[in-house]
Image (cartoon, rainbow, N blue to C red):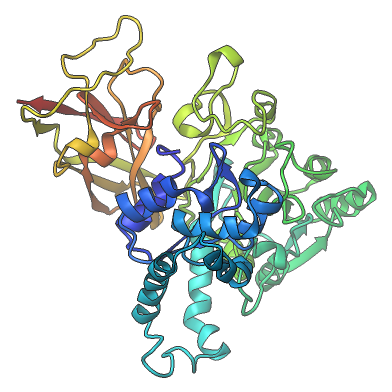
Length: 540
């Protein structure tokens, strides 16, 4: 919980000074999150110092009463429990309908309500709610759907596209050589599917067909009626299109019928006959085949990765309203892809290695659990976290680095023990509790990024840290920073990172304590093979 799930929220509150945090429907360690004073009052409001309010996910209190049946609470009990836990605003009807009765019954005090109102009005005042007409009231569709904003949507989509495979530099395609382009698959004419879940109203959706039609003659065949792809008879027309075209792009993947709230996937493969569509179209295609995957989660596409006739693979995620243009920009070389995978792409058999309901992130050898995420899983993958290719080549050089961090201790500091693997070196002072330290020690990393290819391009530089060798049951590595840098062909740019030692090198023990271990922490620069050690030393 502390190590993985709370970390991004903590960063948003402490470093981003957000005005609101939402608690969820589920229970954590048996307690509904919206009724957990340790989570809301102690952690978010207290330790993180939230300057705003805490709101429930809609109807979370109702779910707590009717579904969780938490402690047999009445409606008034639930209102009292959540208010006292630190929930300021109810997205639902419970505070509206039952707070007055809770006060009458003596379960809620007026000062509990006043405390929440103070936080709510603080944010309203910060937003200028009481300063007359809201400054954004006059804005309408023309302001939202401006040329600048549409270009921003296009750029965001392009930056998120990940090039997974590009044999023989098949991409980018050259328009002059591609007279006819077969565009097939369930996402070839994607519209709302590209928007994803919980999105605003798009200004204008540009489907892949719309975008690719601007580049020449397109031979479109659906191949599958939808992502479920249950009608195999639609594959043959797609095969014919590929057979008589200079190049073929297959758009496959998932949508909200598979990936959405209240749905759980039970496999990591493409649905229905999508795999057959890809295989059969590829088998007869006259020209190079490019596979474009739209999805939120990972898919085992090992069959496509190893198929030598599928020259290139792109993952577009759910690219939004300008997704069609963004993909075409990448395919035709108007944009050099530089995206990186934000998740690990596991092999299909991964789902059989651990129960879906197990949220254990670390491996459990006795149960055969392999671990979850790049931090704890070191088994085979289809594509690893952070993977992504480019149309150019980059080289890293270590420009500057601080190799040691000295932490001064006083007589009141107490060393903390860590579990070490058999035979590992156990230092005299293994670790210190982070909350006992000032945590004002920083170290810098400077990277020179050289573009040694023949195209301009952007590179996402990812920095990982690895804990000192021998510490048991901790992460393999963790991301501590990343930056995107544009480098012109033949040029170089320097990227500098500054890291807080406590935040970037800490480990979490089984009691959820944040500890700073002594010893050599390995800093890893992307997948370049460039590493060095930062030594943490405690001095009395």
